[in-house]
Length: 92
Image: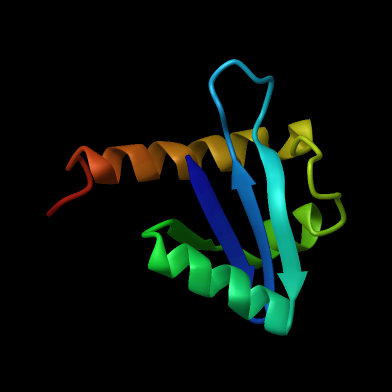
């Protein structure tokens, strides 16, 4: 499962795999690189979540790093929303 968060021209992509301790950063970028990451996400139907505070915080981490523990709660809520959406829970 992957999510993308964006803040204008900044993007951080994260992924969670079963069996690992936390989600980790798979890509990040600003400007044209951010646009490219978003384009790939859209082409692959990857959920895009806009959260400027989360992007700013995660943007200070390196690709391959686990997300910091202080972001686990907000990221867990985003993952839960994505899962619920795929299961039709968030449909009106």
